[in-house]
Length: 354
Image 1 (cartoon, rainbow, N blue to C red):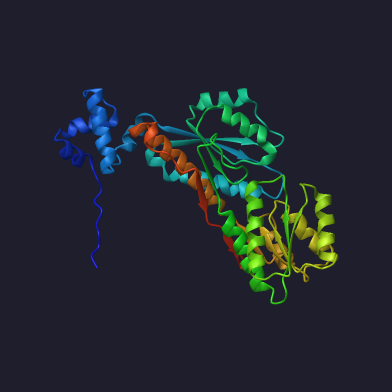
Image 2: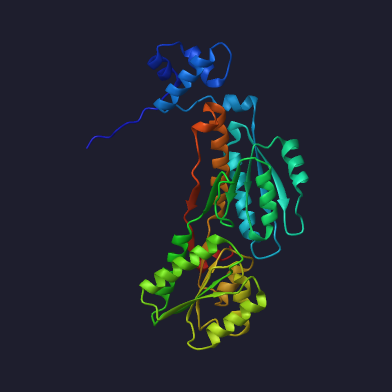
């Protein structure tokens, strides 16, 4: 079987195809004077048709660097590691783009630190920010609304919101795959009849609710005796009441999938009530002291959202959008509405401290 070779299209190929000088093509593609606007458009169109991508993007950006804002949530809850890893992923991608003169500006926000619309405008103008990567949470919807009002391209990093036309793109973990992986693990781990409970929070992200539904459907395909989805409505006391009902009541569940940000409270409950041997548990996201919870039997597996890759992909989308708009015009490259990142299903050894 032959192997097809795809040759990279360079500026000389465009010049040859149009029968013009290489210098004319370079001027047309870099925005330099010396070529008519009509001719410039013809060359740019031909370049697009041929699949040309400028080798001189770095030269263009060196004269006018790309500035990307990173709006990051800092919370005092168990999502600390999640948000930290998102930011690490974003900053690592910025470093990979260093040759293309991409610069980042981080704005820390939180439930006690909510910048006004005027504050956001001043931050954008002072740093000449052209696109923003934002990690959304439902509790900070007002902040998201203000970011939309800035009319700056906005890439969501994480599944706190459903994607709308207000946002350039959404990068999130594959919720359907996450839920199915949780169901697969519970099915394999429980050699007896599956009686499962799935904890959700209707006030948290749409993505978490999608995971719960995917898990429910998959468990029912496996012939689970019953699967109940319990909603604690962002209330810690309600969460404990639901756990009492599900685990201590009848019929007693033997499988638990925590599709909510309250996983730490569930682990603490199971330890305090001495119920760790009764239930097989799949948690969501990393948290502090997770290896200890594994050691105490409060959790058997954890689904990680691959947040570093989510952060990196968000920055890459923002960069590609801005770089392409400068090279060919804003209408010529439209990023995907949604990018899904594969999760990790991790067991105890993954979290053991070195």
